[in-house]
Length: 242
Length: 166
Image 1: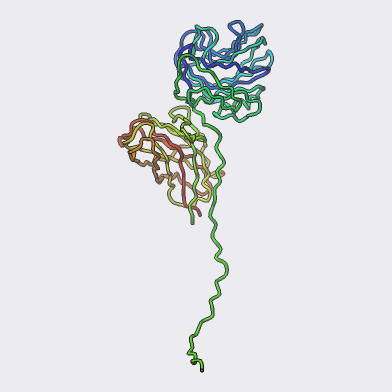
Image 2: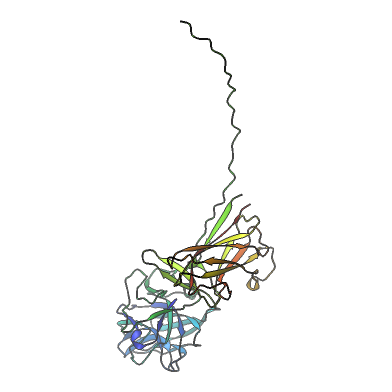
């Protein structure tokens, strides 16, 4: 499942933001092309500092906007409405790497730079620009305060549950439209002024296949044949004498 | 001879990129993780098992399910398998086809909408299954079947494959 956003006031927010290098993975799907900036997630400080993932002004070209002192955009795929995309994003100092792909196949890499000015708000499904709206779905969002490798990112995008728990700052599977942080850090989100709903999600399992233990009942060794009790013979006993 | 059981939990189900049941985790006092099968479109989930100590005979697949919203009607479950013998079969595994489906119709027992049911399905189309084969098990709701009359989603909470061992 996934959470559906369709209004600027839907956005989930939190004051807990990553510090230093971080990696964020999630699945995103556009439900409607608004022909305008459609923010997926990002970190902000008002409208002057922002580093966020969303579409460009055309409404479909997935882009990471790395502004905030300096920085350049990272351009991802031209998204097709109704198609799920995997996106992993690594911000390491001023270097930004985006990994993206549809549900099948390998991930494509794009790079750019980001500013490093301080941020104070994390947002999903909206930006600090009030005219920007995501009309789409988000699922399996995980954020680490660490740089994950491309292989780690591909593995994380293949399931809802986080494989890596070290440095996990927040984890929102969005099996339901809810704001709980399942990382254990208590970094719950704050709902916007309008409600979000639960809708269909991406084609990934909850987690890896669990080990299955199979007991094969063995043949019970009956052991050696039982020794028969010796035959018993009844005999007439003479009555006791007085 | 005994029976081997292999449990297929919803959390480890694999999917193709289209027509797959949605995964939800609900429940007030216990987490109920389930796959939500649509009543109008055939959706399928897959698991890979190794047929450890399989001897011969049919597979039994127990499908534990409950209704999302309905309290009556029938659900038709369909299971297909694809068996591959490693080191022996030369078939490209990525283009391997599934055997014909076997189905079972299970009736909602009423009284409480979200009560748990168990449908017992017999797989007779075994795709030449042999001991130690890798077996892909596809579980679907046969939504297009006229016998599937239950409204709303059918939620699979567990499937169990069993067979006789050597």
